[in-house]
Image (cartoon, rainbow, N blue to C red; front, side, top):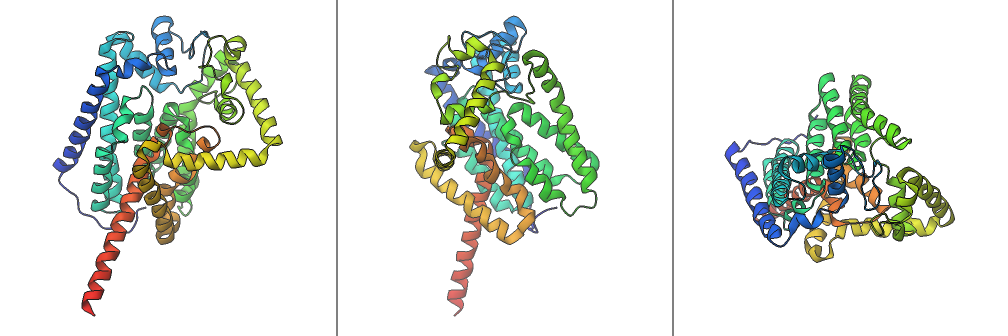
Length: 395
């Protein structure tokens, strides 16, 4: 099921030119960043700390200083990737920093190709080119591979997942889509936020919707079950991927001073992860019940900041946010249900972070869709202006 838009394929060379430019641009920025410390400044964050434990103790544990117990504070894929690099190239070594930067850079550059493909298949070649090149040359996007985090990988996974959902037609394609989205959840479970709306919109009028939907959902669950069992065995609690959902809501609304990164001898280290999360869950629910208006107002404020952060890039983020939401309304008006898979990301994904706290990297996974929608609006506006000019001259 596709938008009724015809397009012409550009030679593959231009697509790989986009990839190479994105790659070189990010490598230049990354090399400069490495010269002043770069990724090595991040050897103490959760990803690196868990990777240290995986290499040295063969345990997914020790997310924070002063705590060596098992953890589900982070999704498993990226810490295992960092651990693999540490195992081959050395723990906290300069060689590992270079390899991790290169991996993030390649992943981020490949996302430009996926954006181009999405634009070509569901809008037009012009939209695909503009959105792909905008991603490749984005001054904010070039900074994201510098983070020792799953940020760049999350953007690629969501882009590929969207492409697979839009293309899926057979039972096995839907099963594959479910497996891919399950893997995406193991990278970043927040990526699942728009998936229910995508599935409902895609399958609503399909004759095989029940079979396709079950195939997708069951394979997704099958991918998550082993990690859920691990968390149950190690932490004695049910966490399908991560444990820190309620804790992050608490930090964003009640008290950030209890965050385990603040002190190596805090409540987290004293109680252990599962008990700490359960305690904060109770206090968070009590806070929301007692202050529903304040919680709603703070959530709205964070939702706005989600679209504007970081302030130092405000002109770029304003244009992107305006273009994205204009694209959401335009697509829904023109295509209705068909547009839902493409607009579900901007609508549903920010809700999670509006309840917790905001950083610029949180928006990055849906920026491929933001760039596509903004490019679509720009092309539509340009075509309207051309049509208006043609009519004016013909009078």
